[in-house]
Image (tube, rainbow, N blue to C red; front, top):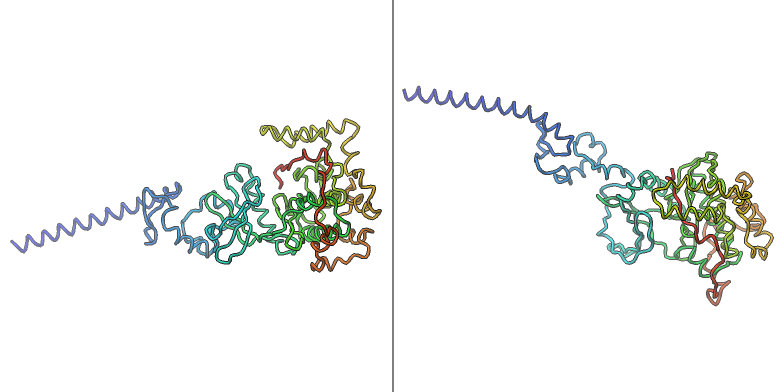
Amino acid sequence: MGNLHNKDSRYINHNRNSHTQREAQVFASQFSLSHFVGNLSGRSFVSVTSNQSVYSASRPWSRVSRRRWNDSTLRNPLEASKTAWPVAHKESIFLPEFPITTDLHQKDFQIETTVAKGAFGDVYKVVKLSENKNYALKVLSKSQIINENAVRQVKEEARIQEACGHHSFIAGAVSRWQTKKRLYIVSEYIPGGELLALLDKYGRLPEELVKIFVAEIAIALDFLHNAGVIYRDLKPENILLDSDYHIQLIDFGLSKWLSLGSRTTTLCGTLKYMAPEVLSREPYSHAVDWWSLGVIVCRMLTNEYPAPAISSDANSGVQKKAQTTDSNPDSLLRTNMNRTMNKQNRTQALAGTLPDNASVLSTQARGLLMRLLDRDPKVRMRNIRQLQQSAFYMGFNFERVNTKKISPRSVLGRNFPKGPPILSKPDINYTNEFEDFDDTCM
């Protein structure tokens, strides 16, 4: 009987174990479907075939073994198909231009001062602690970028700077990465400041120095255009000077991939540097950058600006737009431009007209300005070959400029041995009222 009792007990226990195993299999099968559905809601799930996943009904994916996911997926794209780890939307939309993991982090830098403030964030002068070397750190807010519908624009800027930043007259980015709330861009620190500050300090520059500055800017523009990029925001604020005052072109926020010969119609840029065809909403090409260069040359040579491609009447309407966020800037600009056109076509008549003090310039300098500021883009000077063949650059060695054999700082010191002159503020009248304008520049 005792043996029989033991056999019955083993039989009953065996049946119970078998029943429990079958229930566990059914439960696992049912749970597989439930965890798959849970997958869509962003929760972690258990994997029947893998012992690497960890189930937690209350913890989100972002807190479960993120390091293992970084190593397996981000560092090896071929492993991406083998993991179910999701990338948050606010991170994925900035990939791959802004990687999530990088060798550099914000803690690797010590902020010294704020260099500039932009629409989406600030630029800081920082010191990389491991090298004791200065860099420029640009910190952008993701929420502002997304709210302004500028994700594509920011990614385009990163791609253009990566492709063209190796040029000697264009500032390149050292590293980029993102966190959950911000984008970070590390660039080489350019100590000479903005060209605008130099112009405000010295006023009219000698033609000898203007030739060097304009040649360097033109070389950078020619490189961008041949690379299939239209810059669209050339102005002294976007031209930095290195320790020897060679130019460095920065800020590609309004730039766009556009092959030579192609045209676009987007209304964007800084108003007092905009070409007439941009404001009239005609299809335009790379020639608009050479108009902007003409405005800069005029400021260098005369300490004043030429007449803009938009009148003060139309500009006052743009200023009202800056205070009214609900209005459509595109239609508002067209309305004001139409009003101006009705007043004896005043905008087109004034566009590119040189200031009165340009009469003291040399014939060669005036000729250069008139060719750069021609209202017809087909007649306008629009490539570096035409610039080299102009009378203003007769006998000038562009190769020495391209290799940085000529020092702009030395030329400046030779022409101003006693330092900057005492200046009165330039008579810019209407130009102080102009602001940046960007109508989804893509």
